[in-house]
Image (cartoon, rainbow, N blue to C red; front, side, top):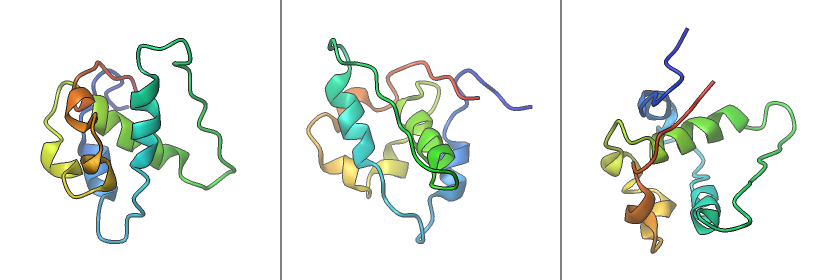
Length: 95
């Protein structure tokens, strides 16, 4: 069994290699909804289309128990205005 509360960025670090398709702009969508009335987001995809990869990416970005600055610094999300505001700023759950 793994760590469910604040699992860190190890899982995303394992899948973030040169063949990784950058889907980090999903983070920008979620950042824009934090603290608003429309804060719920459903990430629905067909089977075998990367829901677990997206969950690992989101956990690595938001998890306050680790430093993910260098992990995301050369991905698309690093160029957005709220990138540093939310990076490693929240408690995370992953199961």
